[in-house]
Image (cartoon, rainbow, N blue to C red; front, side, top):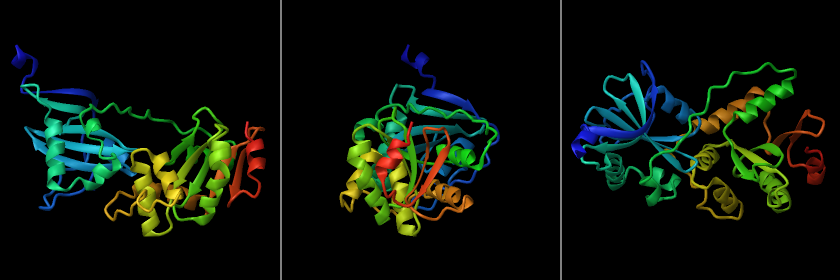
Length: 295
């Protein structure tokens, strides 16, 4: 009876049909420098948004991958024919979770230290099926003004949210080592974010390789708000500099800045009471003035 339920392998999954995979894998390679299979396009998209991708290995005709973003892990499988893309946990015909064994083997090999860091080494979470939601494709609207286009670009940048999700939103580019960013955070952290008056969406960037690595870690890490606050409080381990971390999400944020010829941090953008988009370059001299202009 059990074998009839598990015909060789079964998956707890959401299946997405993807034809003709042609991406190039940038995931971490093994210590044996084995050639990795191509990343399927959905994983390439996640990687470009700052997710860390690692290969789980090939098992009975399926290439396995783990992706970690914002501390959440998702598992993916691609069969040899490459015509479908599967998301979820893999089980064998006896009902044993193959995915968990693959993750444990990866941890045992010592190659998953970065992945473990980003997940907060949450062992219990490894045993849960991935519950990720695919972002719906969005059609770019027409913009009446350049500032509306800028606001759209920031909505679709890679950011972390601080504060009440129902509060008025302020976007702010920040470099982890920018002293003016730290001062701005002191201005708003307790009185405005902590009191639920705004949601600050931090768009991490870095102007040196080291701060890019810290910004990338922040984008991918488990509990990014706690990490960011610990960093601001002087915890030098909160945003470690990992040379092998995926920086594509941060580089996309930098590309947004450069495309708008913006070159200072902090740089904040919000929609005012009158509905227009406002831009503040540098640390606001009077934070209360900014807050009073929010809807």
